[in-house]
Length: 102
Image (cartoon, rainbow, N blue to C red; front, side, top):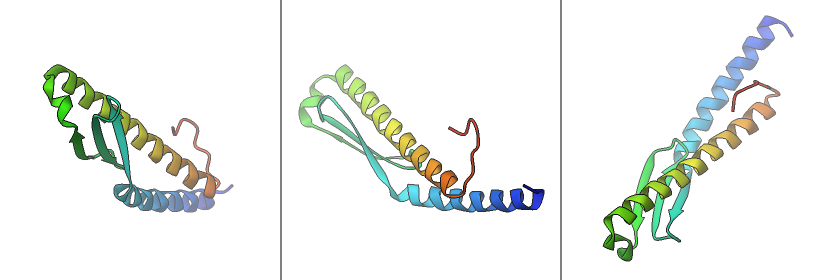
C-alpha cells in the first residue's frame, strides 16, 4: 500500500468517525439499578440525559446515592459498548485494522 492510498483511507476513516459521533449523539441507552428503582438515560456521547427515581428509593439517602451511581455506571458501560460496536463496524467496512483501538 502506498502513502497516498493510506492517507485516503485515513481521511475516509476520519469522515466516518465524525458522522458516527453525530449519530451517537442521537442514540440513547438506559442504565438501571435496584430492580429498576433508578433509571439513567445516556446518549452515545456518554452525556447523561435524564434520571428517573421511583419514590420508594428516596426513603434511604445512602441507598439512593448507591443506586444512582450504579445506574450511571450501567448506562455508561452500555454507551461505551455502543460506541465500540459502531467504531468496529466502521473500521471493518473500510477494511481498516488498528491494533489497540478498543
